[in-house]
Image (cartoon, rainbow, N blue to C red; front, side, top):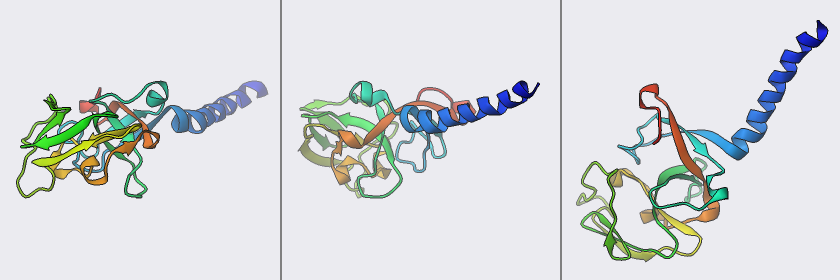
Length: 175
């Protein structure tokens, strides 16, 4: 009887230790969307699970939504879309992103990203993405602090890839 009574707390303690001692710091972590920089793909207050092993097993690909350390020294990480890979030459003309001179297909953009009066939404670059760096941009180009302002992100600063949205339930699924 005593064995059965002790078994449940021990299982709970081990489970707690695994989740918070291994899973969260190493495998996956929740992240909430604090700003409108990724609208319409991600909305303010959406909650995601970020796969922290994704880029230990591979490299970021164009189109991935990635969580990375804030490049301006602030504590909260940022989440943006990978637009440029190492070696790419990027430029923005009339709101359209060009990679090595070819227009980038961006079906996730809902609005016209070129807004006169909004910095770096109509024209930017060209810029070449350095080795081991990635160029990140928000889907809401008029309201996104991204690589256009702070430069390409070092690969070592990328925390993980957005895996699944779990909140709100009505929008659950792949981001």
